[in-house]
Length: 463
Image (tube, rainbow, N blue to C red; front, side):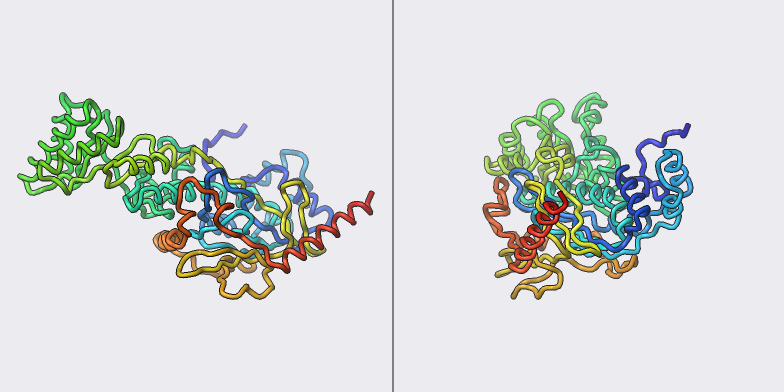
């Protein structure tokens, strides 16, 4: 009996992070001599309700997986114990390496349903085994980045900090959230490990337990300010927010007498509109207009929008649970579909799940720096006039051929993309179907219709 190693995907075991049927299909392909090149598209079928766009993230983790995924001897022995895989397939796995090609949209790119965000061309067995991990990575990162982007838009230029790790769905998810949120424009994270791994600025104030651990709130504030005079943010709503603000002003005066300035106060509960306005008044009248007000407490883009519309005063927001779990839309429907192999073009005809055949490119048109429309076209047809391609070559024959940008560069790209959004797509309660056109090129449309008719005839003839 193996001893469980709870919760960790490592370089040694990540090859086993796949659905069982990926391996049984792969073994069957091998038995039938079906390992010629095939092309798969990874795309998202539909937007969640009240979503206007998606923000791509997770490409660097995808590349890391593709370049380093290996089946160890332990993994192969575990599969042998299942008693269903052929010896030839287990031998094949011993030398498994990804040798295919990958085209992808860069991280930080805005995209829409139906558009391939990742295109994989490889020997069929390789391409098949990769499906689960590629979808897991991309679906998670896109979900988190797209949610965080909406929160950042709602904040209207005010700083947003990721306060989510204690409510995220596991440690691995919390790291993904922090990275994705930073790409989307969040200014910092409370997750210290994410700061260490990714170079994201880390931030934090104090908890109510800290305040309650001292004889009085004022004692707690004085102790914290003495320990962190250059960076003190005081949580003022443990007992009474207005009294807490008055205590913060006392400490601010004491800090100033020592040559320091109080950085800010945080309000985590109550009527945030009325409280923030009164706290701002008290701070200003006391001579501390520079002291920032941080708001937190079950925030998301909807509540931030409503708070600001109602006149709340805030310099920054700490957003946790609802962003880290993407509470209103906790998943995106990413799929990975065969579109071409050595026998020709492939299409799926299931009701509501029609796919577009062939290797494709996505082109985008801009006007005055704003996105106008997208075109999904065949990869080998001329680009529509005045458009730019979104898919770029990343891996060729198993080797990285593109320079991966730094996290700061990805974040800058996302910021440019967000600025290029048409105004209607920046609204919280709008769906892209009403505002942004994604077109299919005439050639791809004709080809899709022809392949669809051919498949239907072939299936009828087979009966």
